[in-house]
Image 1 (cartoon, helix red, strand yellow):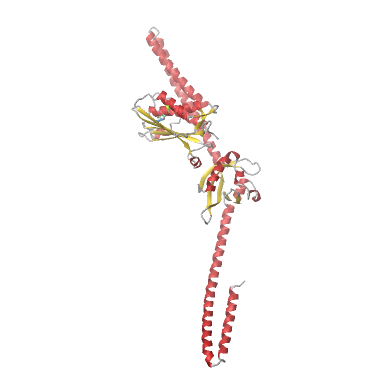
Image 2: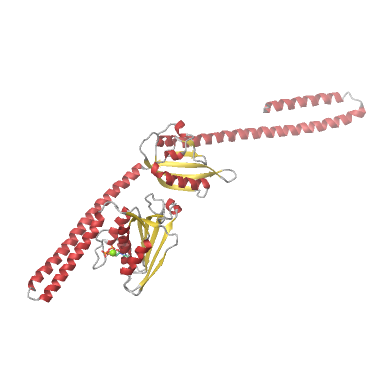
Length: 440
Ligand SMILES: Nc1ncnc2c1ncn2[C@@H]1O[C@H](COP(=O)(O)OP(=O)(O)OP(=O)(O)O)[C@@H](O)[C@H]1O
Ligand SMILES: [Mg+2]
């Protein structure tokens, strides 16, 4: 291999040869000397150019060595950052096989380097989350999604250690030609966050129980006072059968109201859904509209796509929720208005993007009920799901509280959007299935 100095040695040798040739020119006959000397001049010019190029080359070499050293420093720094980052970093190939894993990733997966490298990432995903993971992975692999940010998943560490919740971000690395290449993953353990959330939920539950107990006591106290009043007054009317009958009617109403409250409380106290069915919500909506839509100034508009999935839930309970929401909408429009009811299937993209808090189901349906009624003021909005909260003279304030519990118990989600004076929209997200007979 030639180094700089070896080129310079050869150049010096050429200069010496040139000197010798110039000396020999002195001994040549006159007629050749001038031709020979002009040839040597050209040779000398060429040597000068070579020297210039060699100097340039030497300078470039020095520069290159300096930038190589800087690059190596950068690489070392990147490696250190990668190895000692607090989050678990993994690089997989396009088929999901792990190619690189940093210290934190090995720590999270409770496995040594050789147990991780070359293994499919999917073996470190908890069994019940594998389907969701495969779906996300496919999208990244095909390049239809470039990045997945802050999703939750349960990781399954090596050797049967218990799964734990983690948040992850994943991205596609494109090769020089722009095609999707390897995939980068960042995982962090969020067990503490999950614990904190569970604790908060517990606190929420306690608060709800407190609210519920306070509400029941308050409502029943009023009802009993009412009932006592009617009974006392009935005593004064023993000789007036008409008035007596009136008092008894009023007493009966109070008892019916108490019964209604107890019925809803019973719904709230039921822990599990015992009667899962697969059914169409269209029929339920038709029935509710037929029974409840009495005001001729309210127009209802229903739109459902042909391929609408069926709901998988307790049919009677969901029927009750739809009824509560439609009745609220109708009650918000005593002067008349429009009631819009529509439904659509929710795409996997919307589920994967965390469009709503999903309970891990594969398919969902969204039912939307909009009214052009009085709307809900901001300060009321925070309380509408509280048991016994009502702004109505005759309301129990249990309609939405019960609906919320039922929807949660059935693995769904309820959302509301409203502005005072501009109507209200409720969205119900419900686990869905292909109608019976359609499923593959
Ligand atoms: N579509 C709506 N438009 C305007 N306000 C609404 C609507 N839906 C609910 N609300 C508000 O939320 C409150 C709570 O509703 P919820 O159904 O729980 O009880 P309620 O309707 O008052 O009583 P009940 O359902 O027992 O008749 C209502 O009193 C009302 O203020
Ligand atoms: Mg109601």
